[in-house]
Length: 222
Image 1 (cartoon, rainbow, N blue to C red):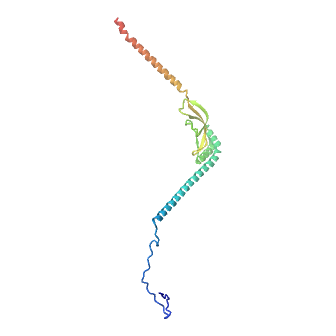
Image 2: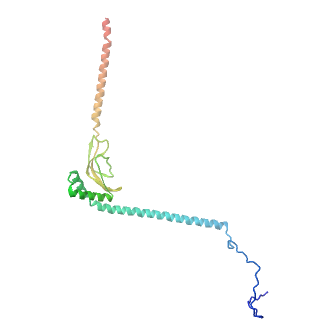
Image 3: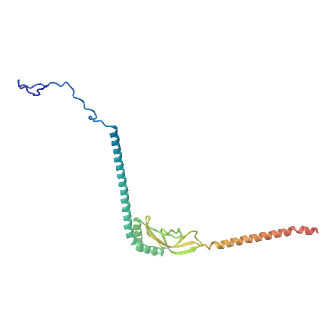
């Protein structure tokens, strides 16, 4: 059946009235007519988990890269700063010797204290004291001896102080060290043995005197 959909009637020349469409338009399905199977859902979840793992791995790699860059930056800064400060060690040594001899006075004292304050702000630390335990990591032993006054290998004199920035040693402290004297215990041992011998001799003489006294009543009875 052919319908004439022309709006103007060719016979009358009038505009035709549209008839109301009584049949409602079919409703579109909520999912667009497509259905998703369980296999497709599982595949999508697997892909999502893989993408999430990739993102987490990239984030971890970036965090490690950022930490490595920061660590390298600090190391380069400390190395450059250490090279500059190493050139000031002779001046700082002269200041220390002048202080030890009470020659750090006047304007020289103000300049010296300002220089030490600046190097301290930059992280430079001076170390090395008499009496502290000897540590081959931070000390350089130039002299060695034995002493009865120490109980472990110790620093007995600081020939040249050491300098460091944080955990980095710029110059080890050059020191004289002393170990406990192995012969220091012998006189004490000999004295102890002599005392024991004297006690034993005295005890023997007391026993002999006691035996002599016990025999006297028998003689009187005769």
